[in-house]
Amino acid sequence: MDTQALRAFLSVAACSSFSLAGERLHLTQSAVSKRIQQLEQQLDTQLFDRHNRTISLTEAGQALLPKAQQILALVADTELQLHNLSGEVSGTLSLATSHHIGLHRLPPVLKEFVRCYPQAQLNLEFMGSERAYQAVDARQVELALTTLEQQPPAHITSHLLWQDEMVCVCAPDHQLASLNQPTLQQLSQSPAILPERDTITFQLVESAFVRQGLTLQAPMPTNYLETIKMMVSVGLGWSMLPASMISNDQQLHRLIWPDQAICRPLGLIHLQERTLSNAAQALIRLLF
Image (tube, one colour):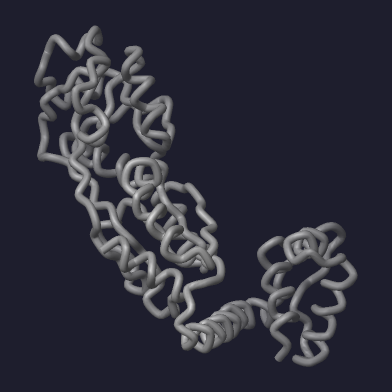
């Protein structure tokens, strides 16, 4: 079975469009259509239902989808295993990271990686925790440095690297500052500036309010902790930020968090069954 045809099939299935799949693969629409036709002829079955302006997978196409993904993953892993035998640290390493880790934890590691392995190229993407897990799962990135889930999927391996202590803060002139140790009830009555709802950080904070039957107000979510820090400093609300970000910061007032301490587990994730490139293994050694 032709791997190029399988790649075209997966792209068309993902895009629900021959033209968009062509753009993704850097091929013309006709070239993509030809590869799909050849695959359908080889399998003697129709893989897509063609409608007026849309297409969808047939029952046979749906059955082929996971098998095609497995075949291409196996081919990629086999090629990588053979390349790894050379011992050379080269090629492109796709790495996802959160903005906080990328700004505050990763620079010295990346600097050493670039110095030691000049033949390797880093493809660095910034994304939130849920998106990072999805990117690893879909093989869009080889490694991700992110906030770790408490119960990660069984097929994803995680390694704890740092514990990020979170502290409750507001502006010095915010109404909460006079309370010093506000209750969760009082915090629920004031806007919170937090990351998006699908992030582990938000879920850790929200769970404290849910346990008390309270609703957390978070009207202006953003995944940039530096932006959250600025918004809190001008009095737009309170937040939970890493302790390392607010050390000796006169623009923020530290509040006593009224619930059990919150720590974000930060670390490395990758697919358990995926063969890691020499470049990925080299970066892991530097992290540990």
